[in-house]
Image (cartoon, rainbow, N blue to C red):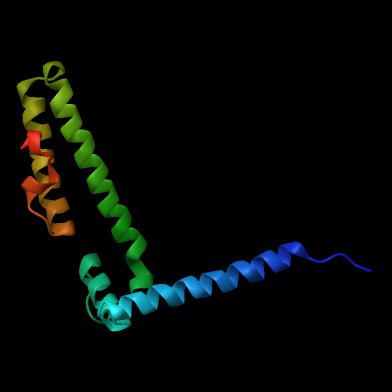
Length: 123
């Protein structure tokens, strides 16, 4: 007698669990008033896409850019907070300009006020 293909069975079980999880998530969204159409519209807004654009076609590029902007903002703010003594006034001014540019982009991307991106003691 042959052995049971446990790898295949694990994959099938995992697939069914994934389907059930997606179903539960869809059901929960609908109970909260979100339809697939609403979710697609909101995702396109976040990505800056038009009605006819496909999310799958370009979401990775946009999200990578958003992540780059966030991480760069964090780096610049940390540098300004801890390394001002190491830089000339000209460099500090350039860093502050970069910070301000990134603050504008990040606050727009996440639809929050610039001030809300800072912790209370850093406002």
